[in-house]
Image 1 (cartoon, rainbow, N blue to C red):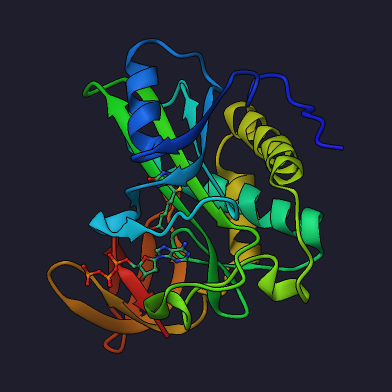
Image 2 (image 1 turned 180 degrees about the vertical axis):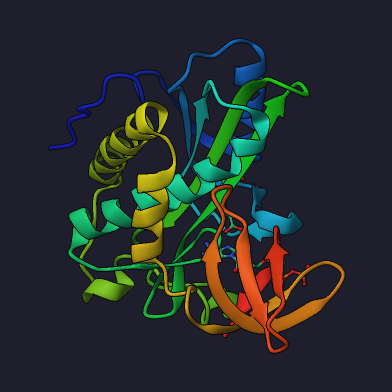
Length: 251
Ligand code: ATP
Ligand code: BTN
């Protein structure tokens, strides 16, 4: 069943039982020249990395933890677009694999019934004007039936959201890589616009009143859109528009 139908993504798959983080392994492989589309998957991560220096809970047996190496011919400042592209591909893959309809929370949390089912961490190796590699880390809670105490209210898995149905991780990654390849090729050929439109259709952040907590301040306002670079636009009560590059968002 798990048949990989891609041209480049996942043509080289490196599987490990246990790693510190697949991001670290992928960075090293990329520095050694690994081809675009190379994937590092691990059953378990001892120190899975989340955004903003957080940890990512990555127990063995139940989740899909992997990092994808891309070498897109785009300027470094456009790399954040790939984060939104990844969220679109993951969301569509969840729907195709399970029939469930996740929502995207800016920039890249994938939620089912308001709880986080997947996370995306995009990192880059680049010179000032040229990307060497983009390392896209994707973590998807597939078959967990319970989470550590501190995550139980905020995290969920595909299995928990579908009355205990168990999903094959191999099937899921095959589906995800085909959705990913579709969007990645479309993006390289036609640009970001269609990805952005699809992202906007799958998010619930836009149009909502939100609180954005950045490293330096907390802002309240309405999320009115994203820019072509994937930057969130927040309209404050006084009508002024703020650009949000990195923040935690709550409703
Ligand atoms: P700090 O107190 O250091 O700022 P934190 O409590 O905000 O950290 P961490 O404990 O470092 O965050 O990491 C937990 C966060 O990571 C949670 O907010 C949650 O969003 C997320 N998280 C980690 N692993 C998973 C997972 N497997 N599924 C869903 N969410 C996860
Ligand atoms: C987040 O939502 O904070 C991002 C989570 C990203 C987790 C994945 S799991 C595979 C890859 N390896 C890591 O250490 N992190 C990413």
